Picture (tube, rainbow, N blue to C red):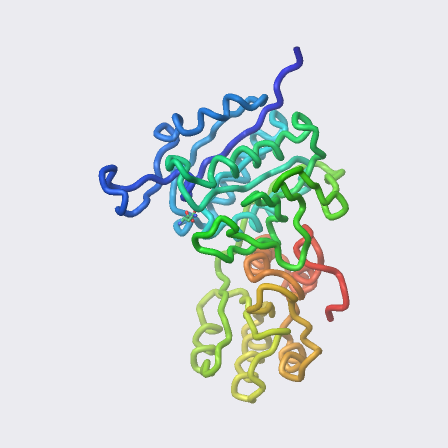
Length: 349
Ligand code: ASN
């Protein structure tokens, strides 16, 4: 008999593994639980024809996660890379899109599936979305066992859909359909027969797998809003050690056109030498900064286009490129280049 395929599961916490703080009060807040307490709820995993190995990090609500945790996850994957068919990361949904983007950049030349999942309802509750998400994530992590093609990228499995990790956005705080894929088709759909969108799946890397181990934290992400004052903007751009910022603008990349606003942008780009990236506040469509005067002005002041990247992917990509220690001009050029399928090549300036 051939050996079972092996999947390595990394548990970081999130609702999937939460329990009520007061076991006798189902209205008490949910708090992360250790895997030991969850074992009886995941016994269904034994029925899968795969060998699962569980690695537990200090379980947390993903609102407590930070870039160092994602680097730790990348290290654990690197240390076990050769011994497993694929990896499943159990991560809270609140920051899952950031975590997925981070792993997509940190894991370089990936040739195996890394599937991130979680749930909106804990696995310990009778009615939940956790079992379905976990079982399906495992299937995609050991695809050959289930007659599926390999999807060798960092993806999110949630509510019958497999999404490219760095295209995902959380759009629902409680509904099962918690995530959408922005400006990119879903990689697979499992509602009924399993459909794999093979044309849109990344090819496995030909070079050797390795990981990057630095994400620059001296960055900022903020929304433009009607009435934002130049003082607030200057305050942000004056943050000591700040290296770059992602600006979430209106619609196709538009922002106020008054000189006092634009002067602050010029100050950031020319005086502070910051990398400023423009992405849209909208879920879909991306930016086309030369479409309107209000976007073109930012472009002419040296703000670079984030095209159709999500704000999550743009922020993490900025952390990643600055973490590599690239010069400002190189960082700006690479921000606009497709590194992991996070940005569409197209008619974006
Ligand atoms: N607060 C939870 C978390 O992000 C939400 C969830 O996982 N559904 O850890």
